[in-house]
Amino acid sequence: MEESCIDTQTADRAGRLLDIEDRWGAHNYHPLDVVIERAAGSWVYSVDGDCYLDCLSAYSAVNQGHCNPRILQALQEQASKVTLTSRAFRNDQLPLFCKELAALCGKEIVLPMNTGAEAVETALKAARRWGYMRKGIPADRAEIVVCENNFHGRTTTIVGFSSDEDSREGFGPFTPGFKVIPYGDAAALEAVVTQNTCAFLVEPIQCEAGILIPPDGYLTRAAEICRANNVLLLADEIQTGLGRTGKLFACDHENVKPDIYILGKALSGGFYPVSAVVSQKDVLGVFSPGSHGSTYGGNPLGCAVARTALQVLLDENLAGRSAELGAWFLSELQRIEHPDIKEIRGRGLLAGIELRVPARSYCERLKKLGMLCKETHDLVIRIAPPLIVEREELAWAAGRVRAAFAA
Ligand SMILES: Cc1ncc(COP(=O)(O)O)c(C=O)c1O
Image (tube, rainbow, N blue to C red; front, side, top):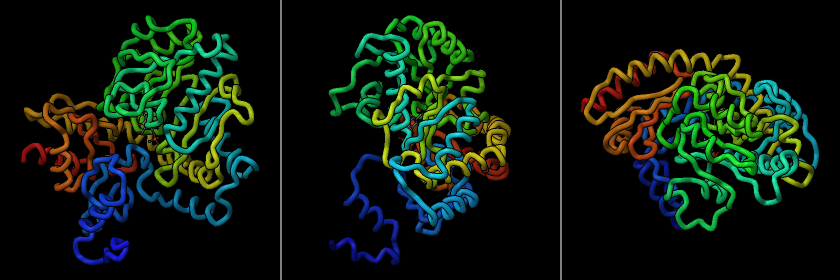
């Protein structure tokens, strides 16, 4: 265990930590080489003493800002009382979390899980069971429609219906029962639906695919098609939900109420993995004791954290801030002209700069300029700061982006 003796307090601490991580960690990510040891609000601080404006927000998990003091306090208070009971017993936070989240979503019941992928799996299981129990689909014939370029997580079932070969390669055989259609194409949905279709799973904006915003009216039309064919509409709002796009949910931009909301990430403001599926009794009621669960799902620590994270979103009107600041920031970005830029698009504080060249080198350049962004789908720089970001910080960020393209 030679590495454990390394004095990480000495110079080049970052380099040494990178070496340790490379040696001891699996290489399933390609991070920017910045080693963060501290964060507050919209800023992160590296072991080298550098500070950066966080323009990824942990893929929109940190909408409430890093180490949000109210959420931190809730975490600390709850951690000193009880953290985990399992669902073998009840706890005093779960009922209130379910009630508050259901009310926020305008739905009847909540099924808490931990990660986003688990919540997606939960929604898929609910939809299939609903298909058999309520819609009368013959056993093992249920079909779920999904979109090309989707990103719903990393389980074997979920990557099985991904159209991204890097996500799938070497992980088969995959779960059958999924049909893939082009994103943003309501006619394709209408054409593919059969009597055995139980659900349509969709991201209101495809974030990992490169901030792809579907045509206006797409979600409305998809909801109509689902309703007409007795198909559940499952909205994966794990990344777009909870204020990121300038509304509480991205579906709200078209006043669409999906049958199931799938939530995660900012549900806990970055403190703790909390995800949830929120729907009607008729849908989530298909689960009976023993048919689904998770040791940590609905634990009191996660529920206390999530309750406060939601309260912060509401009290600080983070969706409103996202709408207002995001519109202004986008217009600032759109003034930047450069031959490498193909399009700059966004909604709320979720912006994508689509390039004609790989985005990675620009993310490296922005890092040198004090701004942390991550490329998505090779050609797109995603800019998604915490929703508590100040206008002056965004003005500074727009200047940095301008400088990166001027360099
Ligand atoms: C839209 C969407 N769905 C699902 C997931 C998976 O969430 P997790 O990484 O917490 O499993 C993500 C994560 O980026 C996501 O963006």
